[in-house]
Length: 332
Image (cartoon, rainbow, N blue to C red):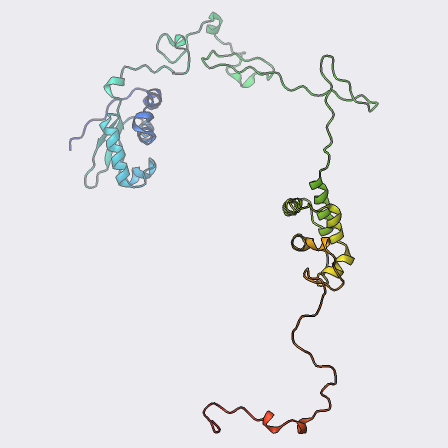
């Protein structure tokens, strides 16, 4: 492959080239990965003082430009070369590829003026703004500061004209006046209305029911408030709704001892949700699990103490103690 000579570069070519990429919005045409590839190449040309082309192996250049593999680099490089922004010469055996940035002919005559300033300040095409005030041309003496590092913080600095709008600070929030030393509230300024007093919230039936549940279950308002609110919603939907007095009656130790003798300690949210109905029907002492004491149900009959003490082994037939015969044995 023919090796082309490296072109001659002007001073600060890399900075002018990068500014050109941004000025024509090349990232919208070729993508940000293409712009980054060109930026890496042209800045490394600047690092070599524009003496020769930049050389890279594919495996070496791919991670520098963010390509996950060599094939991705090859596709990216082809897109940039076809667009006319990159010169590439493939390497050979033991020779890496050669790169340098190229400005397409249609962009060679574009000026290097900033895109965010007033173009009238750069009438001569240079990067130095044309002063509009003759006093700006005066030479600084040895006693005058050359930069802003020696300026006083209170000294106003020169404002440079720009096309961007300058934000104007708005009026800040007014601080309330301090109360007088006597402790009395300060009177509002003339023309301003006095602040309205805060209204105190009146507790509803749900609030009283919530307080009763917290009291009976010894729950924490912040930690268990969500569970308590769910039970409040169920209790107010009952027909008729449960009242705080009924909840407090359920938590009475005497009532719990009669209705739920198996319960130890204070009732939980789940216990109240399951057995709150006991407070609306009579409960006899000894009732448990929500069932009132009543007639005994048929079940296993227990022997009375000493009922069979008069019996001994001699009165029981010997066949009672004989081992059971397996099926198919004698007697079948």
